[in-house]
Image (cartoon, rainbow, N blue to C red):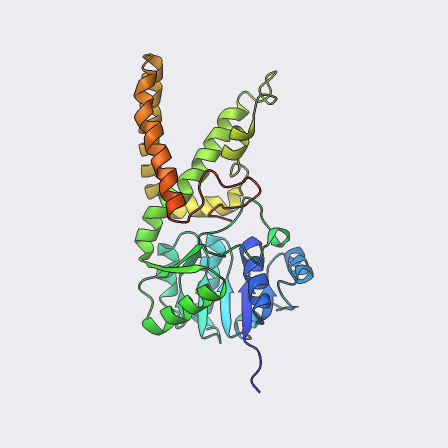
Length: 296
């Protein structure tokens, strides 16, 4: 009788622990490693892992499938470590939100496929993990992966309840500059603007649910986002400038008392939101208790 498959997770924060919870529910033995001991203890307490590896090398040598669920800069370091000491696993995945640099480093590895689950939360850590986090969500994988590895990656993604999507790594990064990284920048910019006046009488009291929903990503980790923006800065800058053009046009019309000129922009926005809903994707009308951010 064969033993149960073993999954190793390097990094048991929100995404890693959520993968562990889902895999454990599927009957997989999950082993974890994390540089933060408290994360390991919390993940084990949640049932996301059943045991801990002493270090990353021990984890990589002990599992059938290895998922690197670390921030981008740490992911690149761990992939470089695997280039000198290969994993035993027949499949190695990452979940970083920028793919081109990861795919470049990962090409030196026998079993690696660059992937990205379009799921997450403004919350972080294993305490926020959810076995249902990936259900129905898109999970990309690198179009350049060899056919056998791509098949293994698709099977793993499906086991998480997600929908596999093949995409070129550079095209992925160009698109998420708009769909994921720009929303983060907007939330931060809005939060910074609010911060200029939030201490004034009445400002905090007059912030309602609209401001709260817009700021949902505003307290995201600088440590995580620094690496993302450093790696994908130029595409993000293009999207920021394009949005700035829209905002400038709005301001010009408002200054000129041409309020009716804003109607086409409102209509275009409503059409985009409806398109997301028609495709089964989260929209601006998602209830506030659901966590639908793209990023950790």
